[in-house]
Every structure is written in C-alpha cells, then in structure tokens.
Length: 254
Image (cartoon, rainbow, N blue to C red; front, side):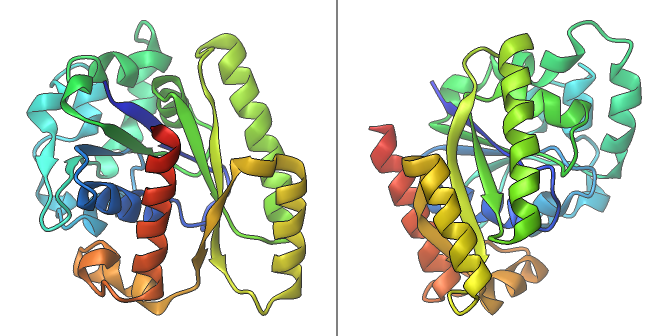
C-alpha cells in the first residue's frame, strides 16, 4: 500500500512544485513506484514533468468530478520514471463544481483507493492556498511535507499551516501528521536564514529534515526543459540534495 504524502504550504514561492517533481524523480530513481498528483490549476508540476498541459484531454479535474478514474487519467513521465495525474487551468473550476457534491473533501482520497496498491509513494502537490483542492490533498494524505524558506514571514505561515493540519485531523483525517519540514532555497551566508533554521530545529526537533535544499541555478533551469533536475544535471547541488532527501525519507519509512 502506498504512503501518501501531501506537499503543502499556504505560502507561495517556497519550492513546493520543485520539491514535488524532484522528490518524485529521486524516489523513482531509487526503484520505488511513484505517482505524482498535480492539484494546482497552474499546472506547473505537469509542465515540469514534461507533459504539455495544453494538450491534455483529461486531467485530475475529471477524476475529482467522478467523470474518469485515476487509472484512466494517469500518465507515465520520461525520463522521470514516475506516473503523473496532470492538471491544467480547467481545475480552477473544480472547486465551484465540487461544492454541490457529496463528500466533497474526500473526492481525491476515494479516487485513489483503486490504485494505491500500484505504488510505493503517492505525492500530492497542493496549491498555495487553503481551499477545497488543498483540503482534498490533506484528506487523502497520511502525512505532510512542508517546504519552507528560512525567513521571518515563513514562520508565521508555518504556524497557520500547523493549525490547519490540526483542524483537518480533528474534522476529516485523524491519521494525518507532519512528516517533515524541508528547508528550501537555503543560503548559508544569510544570517537570518541560519537563525530561522535554528528556531525550526528548536521547535520541531527531528521533524526538520537533515537535508537542506540550496539555492541552485540548475533547479531553476530544469522546469524549462520539462525535466527533473536529476535528468538536467545529475551532478548539480540541487540534484544531489533531492537524492539525499529521498534517501532520508526511505530510511525513516523502513
């Protein structure tokens, strides 16, 4: 049975999509069966995985509305070696359309039941907002990975997200927990970044991943080629960091 991880942060620009794509590729590189779900109407995870969102006939939108099954919509990615439930702008309308549906917060969870045994890991890239799409991601997940920059406002956003996860646990998904906090776009020369990093470790202890994702030009370039950084420049610091993150997650999963 797959371990389902939501990659979430209500603050945008913290590396959620970058983490989703590159963690999926790194876990697949380790021989794991991986499904990546794009729950953001911007479709950046889809494009960054080498799939043109403009050419899609069916997306996760149709899965959420019950018009297609997840197995009918999932696509293999190359060279990422993981499967993808893609998204495009059509998904923006799903929130309005789901309001009238029964069990609207658990549509994704129910859709995944039929294919969960096909994978070792299912990663869900949630949009940077607390909306019905994010709620579906959190309800479907066993745990949450929180990517965040080490800056002052990130701490405020983290507090809001932790409270959101607590509310989801109380009302919808009693099993959900924080899997780990991932420090992204980290510059060790920045004193504030070091201070915030220390605060995170003081408050969250071993929930903070040892792996740190650095600022790296290859990570920024890779989506333009529709590639995980592992297949853009395997020797880059960004690629090595995500391989280390995958190893850290696999070590704790055993």
